[in-house]
Amino acid sequence: MGAIYLVRHGQASFGHADYDKLSKKGCEQSKILGTQFKTLVQPDQIYSGDMLRHVETASHFLNGFGESTLPVVTHSGFNEFNHVEVLTRYKPEWEDHAVMASDMAKQQIPSQAFQKSFSASVARWISGDFDHEYQESWPQFQSRCTKAMKEVIAQADNAKNIIVFTSGGPVSAILQQVLKLGNKETFAINEMLANTSVSKFLFSGERISIAYLNNFLHLELADSDYVTYR
Image (tube, rainbow, N blue to C red):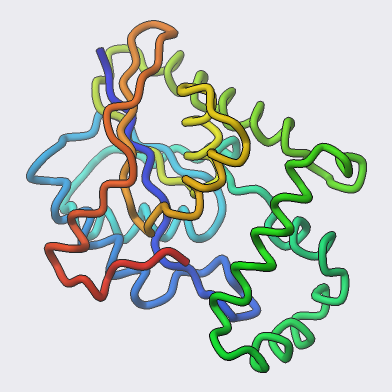
């Protein structure tokens, strides 16, 4: 039996024009995870989505982990859904980042106001009523993520411990298929996934099961201020 550790990326640059880049805290979170991981698991294979926040999380993880000769194999199947498109289909005026920033500045708690709009935009996306408006519909996203997971398993050979640096969306979509969850339950889980949290899946042949979800003890042990969700 093998194990796949799906790692959600470190904190990205929320509120900035380039969200994809890790924040300073996101870099530190990733390094902390690497330092802890080297005392627990020796990976046989490492994968990463090809988004900048995935690549940077893997890089800082390895800085904390120490010497490793393993290559980081990029796999776009583990990329997050296009949150900008999902959001702007719901709020077209936010295609102008300055308008979104202005709207958020007027809110008493900007992060909560943004989350409310983002949740509504995701609900629209997964409803199935507007699939034709998106470059990648929710069913297409689900299929892409589960296909990527199966491809990693098929290429595992004798690997027993595989790390994949990805985002909350793919983690949730894969979990949905394993546990046969509904869409609402899936995105309720997505919203609670912490940055650099680890979700461990077990595989044997084509069979996949969940060992644990959203483990971020490494951050709590370092300092609770490191625990972030966006």
